[in-house]
Image (cartoon, rainbow, N blue to C red):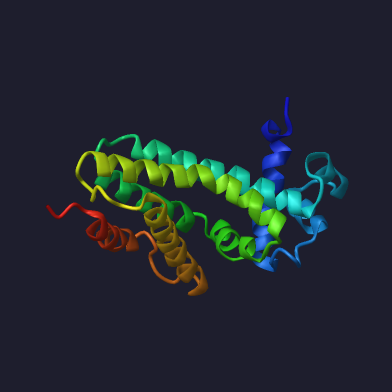
Length: 196
């Protein structure tokens, strides 16, 4: 049985989200994470090499679930435009339902070193492929313009969603993030749609 399927693994990651969101990555102590998880300090090292490993594992685990839910949601429709809306809406919904995770993903993961960023980018690849597939599908069926630069458009879409969530986090999550989905979709879709 691997570590990921053990209940303490999940407890530690959930505790890490809480501690990092409240204290910042650099001020988060492994002992505090252990305390909130209800485990001995040494137990953490049975699952993780160090604090950096906790952050990477947290991102891999949480983003894996995040992307999985988006994949499930968009699989329920054949329309590229509807898939795009569902991706945007699910992106906002999942982070608004887990505000502490939103703080970690939008703020704490940005301050990381290069090695950490490379591992985070590796996890994000799966999400970027989902966006690429929606774009290609829409280009093929005539919903979107056929000459789109997929790589550039994907950066615009991901960058837009990322910035909207970051702004919501910076404003102390005072407004409804999910409500932004329709307008963001409208703006992106009107830039992509086939006008002919």
